[in-house]
Length: 161
Image: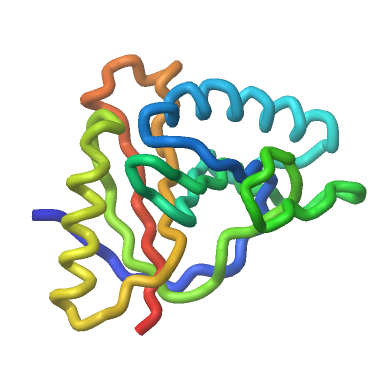
């Protein structure tokens, strides 16, 4: 059983990178891309206003189209938009506005699949329609919270109806 809240969110400016990978390579991708994003934020003087996220445009065993980023106060001058396709270029993007269903997952990342499944079932049972591009917000920094059992990740799923 999960606890779900429905809320309306505003568009959030982000700095992000979108790329294609596989489920098995996700840890390596995050280990590579999060430091790249931090360096890019410093280079363009972007002000981070919340924890990092990953938005999944497609998620399957052989293909994951993921956007990894951080919310920023405003898009700095000169930061070009990401292309909207997985090309590995860091740029400006945004998380969408609208109604979302959200829950908090506690524990290691490898348990997130069960949380997604439970959230999808909750949405369907409530007669709602799950939208495209759910995302995770990493509320715990694994460098500051060493025990994976204590990690908190918010799972946010846009609603289409």
